[in-house]
Image (cartoon, rainbow, N blue to C red; front, side, top):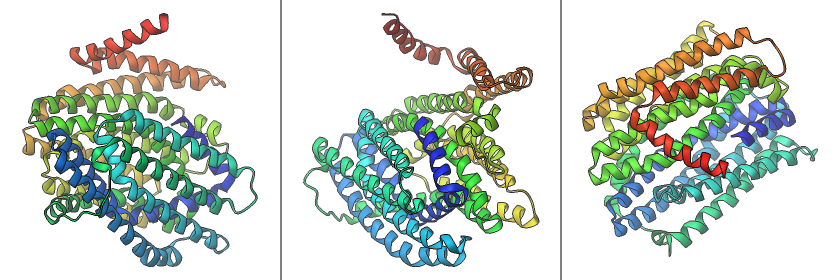
Length: 487
């Protein structure tokens, strides 16, 4: 997270605001073209984890080999669509200065092939997570981040077109990480050895049906994020994409902390459900939703209170709207953090048709609503306010659907999880605003406000935000850690 934030600053300074905006919006087009892969990735993760939970090794091998075959097909389709329809869209409709169009097209081609490599890595990445090899997952992730840091530092020493150079070096990193994932899985997991192309019609239909419904969710997510980004480009040009891109860099860095927490927890939710232990899976969803929100709140509350100061320290150059964009996207991901484990349990059931129809329908409304507000003449800030509103609606819709699917105790969830996190957030927010207004301006104000609000949050979470059993869960490792430090 720290390295990602630092590299964003260097990239912005080295590329400049305009090129930074171009990179974000062109890369967004590539992500949109990968919608099929995102749907299939969720299907692969669910089926691999489910078979491990059932301890069916033969079926696990079939699922893995079939997923590799499917992702190879997806990679070929992405290249065909990206280098025809996608290329035409970038060349014809994106608002990019003529002097930078050549570089933008190079970035587009390199981003396409970087993304294709990521597509081919999905089955191997999913296998590591399904086996809960979190140490390996963390080490490879850290290696990738440090390599990206090296790329950013190299930009300082080259006079060649830095936008193209940046995209080319990121492509090389994608290729290296793909090789590492493949070698590790081939040596560690029996089902990944002696690879051969497999085609199982029944398994393809089963995984494809699951992925097909996930496709709705992926499409909604893309419209929710990248679709709005393209709208902003059309209405305001690449400078506003730079502001939004910076805000989403902060969001991505902060959210990665919670995402990786959920990556560690979610396989256990799926495996418990696969074994038929629904009560234990419900309990884990309760705790995961709560801890995800609190972890994110601890990271984001000081940033929300001191956004402008942090952005000035971090970037030096702070484009218009960046401060308010950053605050709002942090609020948006706080709401979204509650839903991660809920969604995982829905995926574990395998019955996702109704879920995807309703949730995707809600989230897809974000794009036309944002277009309407921008067309009328509202500020670009309203696009994120609209996202927050739909995130709240989607959260309660998810709970209702999960209740129908699994008899999930929604009322208990509202009392035990939502009411507690609301109370903790209100207390911390109120005290935070008071501290922000009462502490004298100085170079140390961020650390003063951040330190005090963190202490308030920790105390509030422990006393108000957790149940007795959750406090005990935290006490044990905390006491062990204190003892180790003391020794």
